[in-house]
Amino acid sequence: MTAVHPKLIKSAINQTPMAMLGMLVVSIAFIVIFSRYIPLTVLAIWFGCQLLLAALRISNALLFKKCLTAEDEKGLVSNEWFFILLNVYQAATWTASSILLIIYAPQPFELVSFVVTIGIITAATLTMSSLFRVYLVFILGMMIPQIAIMFYYGEHQHIAMVIFSVIYIPATLLLSKSILNSQLSNIKAHEELERTAQAFRKQSFTDNLTNLYNRRYFFENAVNILLMANRENQPVALLMLDIDHFKKINDTYGHQAGDQALISVSQNIQALMRKSDILARVGGEEFAILLPNTSLDGAKLIAEKIRLNIANQPIVMDDIRIDMQLSIGVAELNDDNPTMEKLYMRADKHLYLAKQNGRNQCYPSI
Image 1: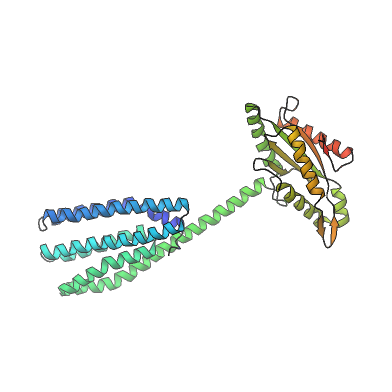
Image 2: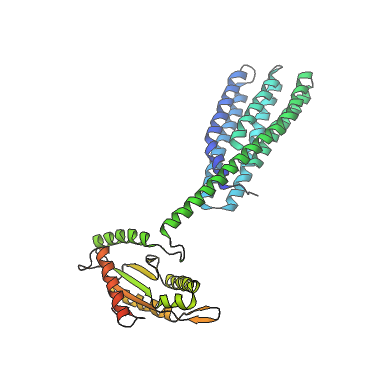
């Protein structure tokens, strides 16, 4: 049943306590005004029904909140039906108050009951418009008995109230729909702003081509990871990777092939990463991987696994096979490399040695 935006449901939830407080205040005012006509025992029973309604509405709001948190669609549907039933119940209690006035109070107090009903409905426009179906049931449940009572009396002033109702009901529903549309527009505008802000945030730490982390994000987070590793005496390793003969790929096959090579290598490496590892593109064809809780020997194994994976997965463009190779420098956090700057310099030096020794290899090797 429910196709209501979660934020609209949340809006109704947030307004429930104040709405119930207002309803109880009006109920107390009703008791004070009509206690001279209606027996106190009857009023006490009626007010007890109002207290029960308030408790059930609060409970309904809490269940709505729980279902929203759990993203329980079935639970949201059930609670919307429960909310509708509670509004039928609320309409019944106020219809009962009107019947009590017919039984115990003299005319023209039935007109006071009509005015109170109009006031409650108007106030509910602000609190229930976010759940339009619920509000529709509520307004009809409140007004139809009042119209019937006006017809029951049938005097000129009562028929005037019926005519007023015929104008009031559609006007109020249109107002409620307008409030709902305004809320939806605000929600959509806010969500669009959030998406735009999120896109800007992502651009600030993501490489546009490969969708990997960029150099800035890598080094900012690496410093924090190294500080924690030093404090807890945990091993950390760094891999520096470079695509061999990348310039030749660009010159021979074009920059589109070069871009495809970068994307392919990025995806293949990323598929081998653990959740704790940080992979970034730190230069044109250069990548870096920070490996928390990884010794030098463990890092060598990972580096060799990556190298073999890339070597065994050539890229194909326009029926042309392009073999890919990586040179990888490996270094670990230790007394000689106690900072990110020193660790990076050591891994970069080892990358240079891997290239100097013939490329397509790791240094130091297993």
